[in-house]
Length: 262
Image 1 (cartoon, rainbow, N blue to C red):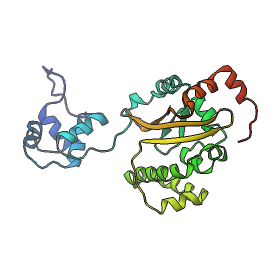
Image 2: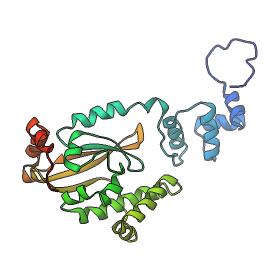
Image 3: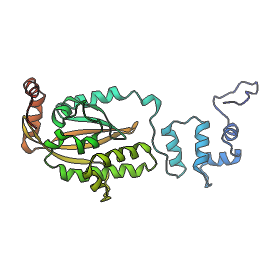
Image 4: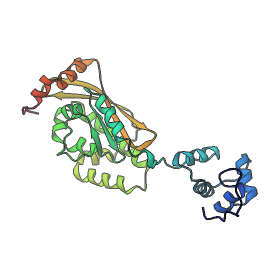
């Protein structure tokens, strides 16, 4: 860490309290009071300096903020957690025969299972941005019975996400693309509704099996705050579960190979 070793062997590993204080740029007495939880004024800048010296992970740094009574910084992906996509791929594949997909923070589709392709029309030639496809993909819109109702919810949820990241240029770019591509989105955006992500009921007219009633649920994994898992669960109406099982069967897959109107 840049400190002289003093030439003597330490009886215990790690930095001494005084050394942490020096490296963090605070007084030794003040740092001792911080350790003891005394009623002192603590700034985010000082906590960041202490966290840097102690080489805290993002999770540990956020916990330090909570202990100090401050709002924690935004969650970040730890380098050791960046290889979770294979596990998440197994998750959505295990969700078969029900549709599932994974989005990044900008609504770009990262992974989707076969049912999402068959039911929702996810495919390589789309934009791979889920909210942009919601408004512009003619295949999806031809199947969505309650598209107008859900459009308001989708835009309200997107506004909540943008509001939580006001300085993020990525969201501003997605917003610009949406406004340019869809007059319907632009009109709904001006209504300024806001809503947290949760569950959305979807009614789809599939060309092979007819009506499908689904409930989509948006989930997040704390270790990957940059990703959202969207799982679709069949509702009791219209015998949806049996229809999804048939679509995933060899017979259903053969039927999906032939062009069908819609």
